[in-house]
Image: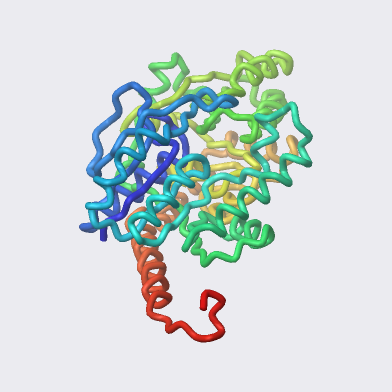
Length: 400
């Protein structure tokens, strides 16, 4: 099978969408299929991949300077060459320029279009467009998502909870729940001692770790308020936050206001293949409280490395987490969350038990297994398109 993916984001821009695209594309190639990805050119080099990447000139997104959107004219210049490749299917990964460009390419190629719904936009837009009413933005986000999801031939959603939301919007497109898998070989070892040494963290200091984009919708401010309670019982606790994003300055200010600035360490983006795994492994506990995750991939990465997790269970993380299988599920309440964190920090035996269970649980989310599910869904979409093209035209057909 030849698959053409298109996205408004990819590495070196680090986020969950980039990781999902990379994971599935690598696995599809490993299974003998051909993948081409159309993605923005960020003006700086990125690591080579085992699949083809066509970089398109891009421009900044006005309200989010970390991101880019594809320029249409340079992309159109590629149309003729792309039509000669014999693609079987177009997989759209993002809802901006890539969505409409991907639909256009699918029509031009005469193949079906599949879209992945990665981001819960109803809980996202008002964090960035702060000058418009939240209720109006949520209304717009719902209708925007429904219209786009109903435009395609097949829809990939990373969790049942997100699919239920989309069905509530009126999305009727055939859909499949397919989370992003974990490349277990990559998340089997990390050097936590080396990470602590690089960042001047004592070997015995209690460390909490959070990994992810530092954005308002990630609910990191809740973790800072929770840290205030943990500090009263574990005075030398440290929260390490790995990632970058628009909320970093506000969170640093909040940490100072709460009196925990010396107990928080922002370490920036960390590359996979060493530094990121070391960061996870340096933690005694991984903490997470996002309300908007369609899956919660970083939680799975922590579990795969044997790091016990304390997290709320909302949207996608509700399906990833199973209480006692590597994690303790907490309410979005500072005291309840802090109690579970302190319980783990004070009980090395429980940490070890949950860590051991976490590794086994993560195997259920392996990337090859989930890539097979993606391929099966692609084939269903292609079969439906083929069957629809063979249907006879009757007098009742509105086109007659």
